[in-house]
Image (cartoon, rainbow, N blue to C red):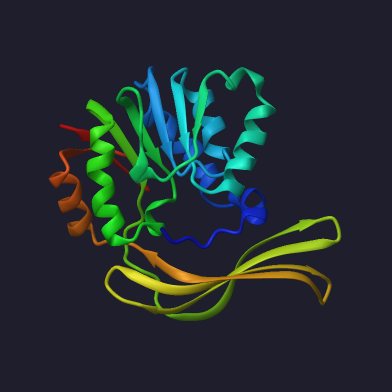
Length: 234
């Protein structure tokens, strides 16, 4: 899987992006879930902790990145009441191994990082670990891939005397993937304190491709708010 995430910047910038939106849109979707939820790509645990507040279900938080997982475990350690209810799975989603199928699966801002072959192999694995009629929810933005463009600032936050900034550049894009560069920079005035550059590919399948893969894996589409797709296992 590919990604453009800088671990030190993640929590600092996430509240300005998808996290606030998901806190509004996810709870109604998960209203009927009471037994168990698997979160795929739990990251630093921002959504994980929110899930624990929305439902009394047992939670499984899958996060392969050691850096992100460390942040997730630190966040859980600040909430002792969650330590008995959240199990952190330290491996890749294709290696998913649960004692019993879960009632729901949630995947927030993960789709863009899934290479096509990986994504095709993932849906049957998820279907195997989801109970019949169970819920699969993930973020989805229609409208195709970003067009090529020069480096552009996306967001910034002030921390003491330092400014944390993320910018991105899109080199090229085709029907379902793009190649880009993300630049994470810490500055104080005109002085650059540190800089991290991540270059790679992002993916956004067409609706026809995605629908075909999910239906082929045994899923049926259900209603969902804008920005999310919801599927149930037939």
